[in-house]
Amino acid sequence: MKKILYFLVFLSLFLTGCSNNSNIIDNITTDESGTNEEVKSNLNIAVIYFSATNNTENVATIISNYLDCELIEIIPTISYTSADLNYNNSDCRANQEQNNPNSRPEIKNSIAVEKYNTIFIGYPIWWGKLPKIICTFFDSCDLSEYTIIPFCTSGGSSIQTSVSEIKNLEPKANVLGGRRFSSNISNEEVIEWLKSLDLNVKEENIDMKIEIIIDDVSMIATLDDNPSSKEFYEHIKENNLTLKLEEYGGFEYVGPLGFSLTRNDESINTNPGDIILYNGNQISIMYGSNSWSYTKLGKIDTKFINNLNEIFKNSDVVITIKVMEG
Image (spheres, one colour):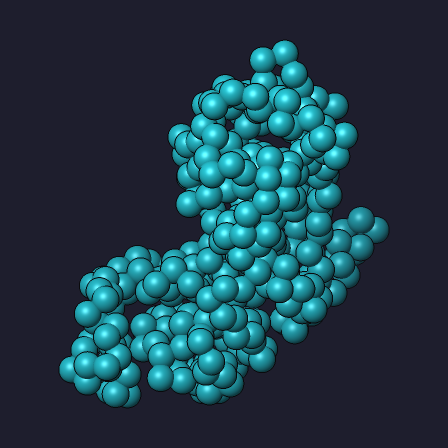
């Protein structure tokens, strides 16, 4: 009897907490054996976004990877072409939609929101406002009592007008102030914003060490803590990777991965030992320096860097990459 009373009191407190979505809380669930286990709060979060030119998608992917939560794209039934987005043409599709307050472009995919209590909503800014397809999304579901966290991509327009629009569309939701990002945003800037939201995200720190083998030489490298590196690490955890790299430009050995990774490119100055993702599907190991827009995956440990020129002594090399054991 005491156990039943305890459970009822706990359940009452839990449901009371759920009614206030200004903070994200942990759920408690019971497995088949009846043992209570903690479920990460980010299972109640979804990142929902519309992206016409991939800029918003890049930010949405960073958020989803960092929070380890579901990523859902709003897909228009009729895709937007470059001609549709030619803002200099007053008759283009985007202009016509934005100038019509009743416009609601149709969404192709079904988006279920019932299992979440917090939603990140991402979109580009069009004429300082929400794209009308975001209005379609809000019209299609009831987000009363949800926490909505807007984010947008824009060259210079503020997010404030679009946040006001969301508040008008969802007057019973807890709509936060949101954040605007430019197209060249870094992972770190997005993550710093997420940390400022105090979402109680449970981070798991993994020291991502890999081994790079060339002939009979073994080098250790440490991968960076970013979404691209984590994807790469998970891939080679499943299967060791053997690649052929060719010397290029007097500063790098580069070759195809055979698969694609999420790109988080930014303009960087590379150094010897840097492991670089180029074009999303090629890997480069730097033995010199170069300035370009890359995604950095990691770096060969310092004690091996002085011998890179000796290790990479041929015009092309075959390397094997695997996860360090232990």
